[in-house]
Image (cartoon, rainbow, N blue to C red; front, side, top):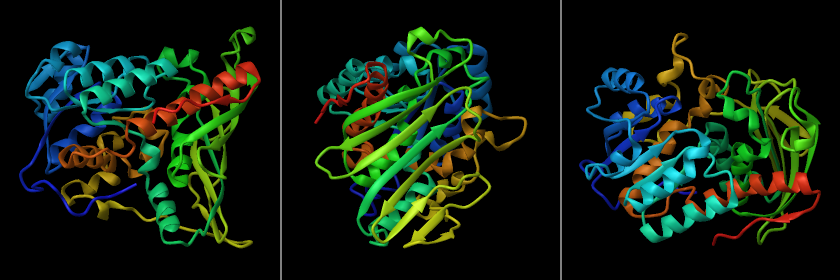
Length: 376
């Protein structure tokens, strides 16, 4: 993972003209793009006209679309940031890439291996940037662990573990048919990013039942837990995911065990993580990493649209603000476009992180170890 310092573009004048699609969680990125020195937020897209105009009026945005395909025909848009329901991600990403737009898309990339391959193919054909906007690899916790790794403090990584446990009551209805591992990237991504590798194979088991659902369907395990082998690596990692009917405070966590030091996520959100040196552990307050960002957007690591008590969004409040990741994500996407380089994560990492969960669920259903497709 790289944070560029030397620019190949004019950081004072060059801009990417961005459209945001989906204004629930997506509204969180509006003030970030408006403040970023290399972005121009030119349009927003939402199916509901009332919501569209309310938000566009609030933020003073002129370009307004209720039709996604019509928006893609706008020559004034360079890039689209997709924040729509999961089932639309692949189709909308492919359409945007085919229309010659750069694409940032919230997680996951898709819900099938076939659709992951379609997005990869569309990116390769278009040559445009594709970035899955995975919050877990830009949180202050991840950046701190990455700093420990890069400095040599961890020594050699020996094992990784991640978990994402969340109660989805109150979310849109389509979540009720979601297999836990189909939305596993928040737990999978930081492990693979720290390992610097792609997932190669998986053996997953399902456990428990979710009340009121047909246990014969095999789709609704209360918990899915998987062990992954990594490509061209001696490392393995373990991931656990739940969506309903598990008594646990919300957590998107990762643990990384090194030969010299290890980092373990805290049990309770109000606590600090533990860094172990040998058998001695000490709670550590993780610093913010706003210093990596342009000054104009540094405030957004601790402040956003959904801070006010009367303006809450479950993805933001349950996730504790996603660890200050949102301005880092926007900045990486914009600079990758302007530097004509692959963003992090690029389309291949995004496909692997997504496919890891898809294959894990199939492994749980079939009771066998499965290979994860290679996209590059």
